[in-house]
Image (tube, one colour):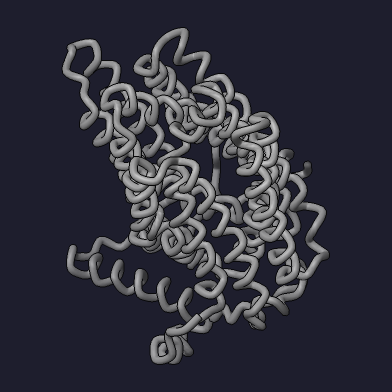
Length: 431
């Protein structure tokens, strides 16, 4: 792809790739380590909730991403995570490691990640022209999901060979390598104020930009687009919490890695296919994709007790539409949102659907011990079908044209500062 000819974008993609090698191993090791230390599905649900909790507050970081230089954010978040992850093997070495040390470490690392992701999103349009945004986002998704494919599948073997604790040492090394790669990124001169002002004025500016980001989002169709995602994320949080137990029910511990690898492979496939669906009206694209996802999810559930391998395959297929729609929508918003608002808008955009993820994970862990992981897994498919129904009955969403032709007016995206008061007076209060 032409985007890779840009050496600075190549450094960004490479850094994300290496960083996500650590993330992929860490995600598997963390849940299993918590389960090993506690022996309780409740604690796996609690751990999932703690990791997801910081995503609820990503919107608070948006103004900082817009205000701070992006390169230092990318670099510093990586080496700080590298240092923090060493807490786990060090605690194990001194014999003081317990489930709470793991959970707290997971929370802090996940919190830092929330600053890294919007910074990466804000960096892409600064490095690539509009014509390369879809391919650029596909490559970023490929770097993200590609590592999941290889290393989620290999995580079980690594844990067996060296133990979950020592996987964290590998994680630390990968974050340090990512730190080095991000130092090779060179961004255009940023027109950001470098004035030496008082703390109160800084706080006032921060709050003003935070409100501006909220008003920009709430005055558009973005909340309507995200309502079904909020529902789906609540259910997905439940599924994440019970996946280790459910995988055991389907075919044993190794199926935990199989399910996650299948999901990653298919999200990756969807991310690549996103380049070929930009001529399809976005409204009907989402309706069709999420309906197919819901059907595949329930086929997977139907095979769980009889043909485990088919259950894994159809579970993965349910996520091809997720990969397609995520890349298409993200690329469309990056093209239309004013450059000086990308950080704060994408932070709100990420935080809104993430709001119920921790609650879903916590409830999933608790309810699974009462009703069983199979029942909770069946509930997960409801999210996809509700998303289909929502896009179908909402005329503003159903009639959206293809991603290449969608305009700011279609999504009611307002970048005229003089009209901001109108947006504050008319917030979206119904879906």
